Length: 253
Image (cartoon, rainbow, N blue to C red; front, side, top):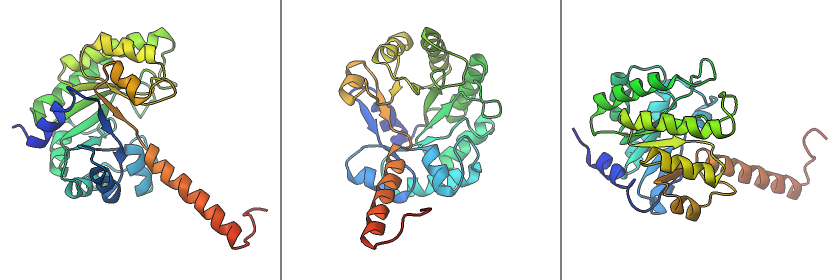
């Protein structure tokens, strides 16, 4: 069964660049909505850290989905969830938990967190097909491709070629969008967009501002834990100023 929020999220992949500043709790999600963004995306790294865990499926999935449910209750717009690699849940259970939490979409990555390498492309495509079969049109699936991340076994042009191969497989399996995370080159990202032939999620960087991403035909852009970490950096600076104003000694001096 389709869902109006999932339908809207899917539509927003076709047209103007969809900008997704990632949230980690109800307050940050509310800020995203108040700023006028039409969708709230979560960051697994930020959510896990706020809960006291490291990223990489080290946080219990029930706690992660409970956080998502709180965000979805606070946000009147579609919420798309960074569900990492799916926490080892079978596709039907994963979909059930995401929908119960109020998600309209999800990211699913092809890193195997037990080994640090990549899940074989065919096996990941089969998993995505299972998620699509279980969800129908009720979830927008963004299939993350991790060939550009360090220690995944690819380098140079090989990263791009494998990202395109995986992107095509994942789209054929039912993914609405693919996300070659970690691309820093406009040329590489342009090749992926052209090679996959469907919606692609990008990230910003030195060569990749929003205007460049839009010109390359990127459908959406997300920021991961950037805003979460920026908040801590601002607090650290503010505490340093406060310490100096109070005449306190430098810690460890």
